[in-house]
Amino acid sequence: MKTLKEIVYRIAMHEAGHWISWRAKGGTSEGIEVQVFSVTGRYTGASMPILKWEIDNLGDVEEYLRARMITLLSGVYAEAFDGDNLKAEVIDKEFSPSGSSWVDYLKVIDELNLYCCIKKSHDLKSKIGAEVEQEAATIIASNYELIKRIAMKFSDMAEFEGQKLFLSEMELVSIISNKGGAYE
Image 1 (tube, rainbow, N blue to C red):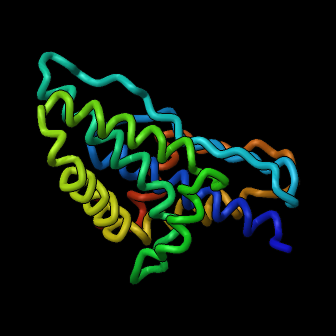
Image 2 (spheres, helix red, strand yellow):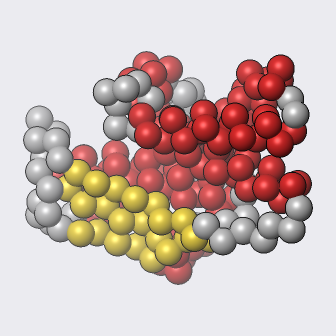
């Protein structure tokens, strides 16, 4: 059985993946929250993006949708990345109907459909999806050390089950600013 700190670390990797991608695409957030109610399986995690986006035209909507798709994929990608490769078995498991990120996956599909409607490019759906997946993977790989640093901070904070752990946007930026990194 995994320890509380190990579980918090894994959840925080996921949420940090969402957070770093959202920031890389120009978004802001309130921070990241993690809470483990029981080491036997009940937990929550949330990267809390501020979904304010300057939208003046359809191009802005496309940019927003693309940023959201990348961000939604990036949580699982951060969990699945081992420093060299994305582990397909982790991605498949987490994005399956019984996986912890099934809802994220459904949101990506829904937003991809809307994106393709706006672009009038349903025949390019798989190509656009692959581009979004590649961009999410690149952001995670380029920022893996920063994501690990954030996850370690959460793990270090964990003291007991049920504890609500929170790092504000300012605290997260401070963590990634202290040692540099790609942050693309």
